[in-house]
Amino acid sequence: MEHTRWEDGRVSGAVYHGGQDLLKLQAEAFGQFGVANPIHPDVFPGVRKMEAEIVAMVGWVILSSNMNLTTHVIKLRIIPDTAHAAFYKASEYFGIKLHRVPCPAPEYKVDIPSVRRLINPNTVLLVGSAPNFPHGIVDDIPALSRLATAYKIPLHVDCCLGSFVVAFLKKAGFPSPYEEEGGFDFRLPGVTSISVDTHKYGFAPKGNSVLLYRNRTYRSYQYFVYPDWSGGVYASPSVAGSRPGALIAGCWASLMSVGESGYIKSCLDIVGAAKKFEASIREHPLLSKNLDVVGKPMISVVAFQSKNGAVDIYDMADALSAKGWHLNALQSPAAIHVAFTIPTASALDKLTADLVEVVEKELDKAEERKRQGKSYIIKRGDTAALYGVAGSMPDKSIVSRLAEGFLDTLYKA
Image (cartoon, rainbow, N blue to C red; front, side, top):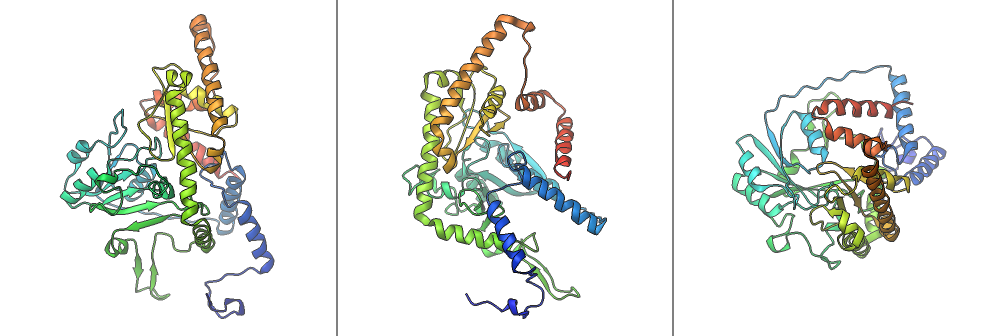
């Protein structure tokens, strides 16, 4: 589309252009780090270091700054135990009381009677996942919708992880969650908002995500408008003011390039691999005897735990890491999960073979421990040490302090 000629200096501010050479350098950097995500500093150490150095340089330029924010809110949210940690983060930031609802075995879905008991006049939001991050389980969204409608409370569906996979399940030939009860989306009258991460299975650059609202009224509450500013009327549609246009363009190009047929194909490959992996754990003679799949995953995530303590799941995680796998260790229950992607789907056979080998070795170690008793020295890996210790500590503030120390190291330039 035709645009205002900022290249000719016809725009006040808005475009802060550092010259063509810099633009080329930025484009090259963007190309090299398009898939990088600083939330995983062990996977992308270069990005962590760059971010730390940026903070250090800006801190040197500015020297110091202080910001104080105080909020006094007595509202509360009700979320499943398995809901994403971002809900805890937002509640802590904004002073909203959070009620956690158990997701009991064997289904690991949010317990609806518990949600009902916790609702009171201060409840501002109910939350369900489609699916949740830990186990890939879809909460009973139709039941949550009925509660939301009955009590006139907004219901948010976290579809960030499922995103472009769960949306195309039906067209790819897989069962779609709660289809007979109206699904998990705006077809249900109680659902008022849905979050979708385009940077995940939409394959857009990192930093892209979409929040959908049932109507304009809900959307308007995220706007900020300040009409009395000396710099003019200020209006911003979201929490962020300045945002990277390159990410928006990259997201648009990704969606247009992949298209519906591409997303159906990726759904077929990803979910097909996840189901094959789940079947291997449930049916392989060795795996089925020593591992259990957590719940009944429907989408791209498969979590598994030790069956009757046959193997140490965190030692398994370290053994798989030693083989080059970067899987996710979970707690409550102690487990490992695989979130399948297109590359992971193509490596499925190797993953399964390595999993079998690791279980065999862990069983041998368990037998050796039995033979030698207390004299047997167990060398724990990083995952086993972290989660084994954290899980045994009733005082989680110690774990929090350790985590804070780790976060501090991310900004060490």
